Image (cartoon, rainbow, N blue to C red; front, side):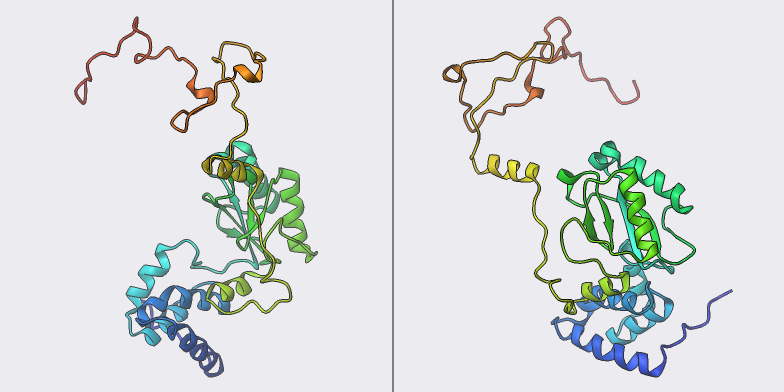
Length: 276
């Protein structure tokens, strides 16, 4: 059955949203460019993007509901069904996964009795697995409303969601103080965060990231000898250590390997045709 047109917001709510929408649209030379922040504004009102929110965006931007829906369904940051006050995302990308992210995600599903993208019965927590958050040096990482909780374990992640559900104070490892998903959505729409100290709060890079930065700048420590995988470590006097040139790359992966490229006894044969 075809759906009826989405209902409108109550008059007072629509008037308030129209004022906010006008502020957002005024930032852009082309009103269509305001769609992404306006969708965040809709989430700040209802906690997810509803058909009413899609209709509102279409009307104030002069778009069709199909055009707005195409954008709202493309990005995973826009929720299409009711979700919790706290979006708990467990990174299950490669490094976080092998450091414990997969175990954390499975444990939280059992602990909360929810699946991926589902919300607890009290409406407090929505659990989801998420892709890389560029915090690999803090792996495994859990995010709550896109704030970082670093170096998590199964036990610490369970305590985190229990505290969120109980209303206990919870502080991110770094970054701004935690707020509800609706409040986060309004900030992402481009409205100021008026909480004391929230703007000044910031996160910093971890030691692994800073080490990579120093290497990129050429600020290297004294070189060390890298031995083949089947050899043991040896102490080499510092005056005998080879200082690498910028073109050289010291890595344990540079040790000799018995591959077709490096072992004359096992040369690579001609490339086979597809299907052979």
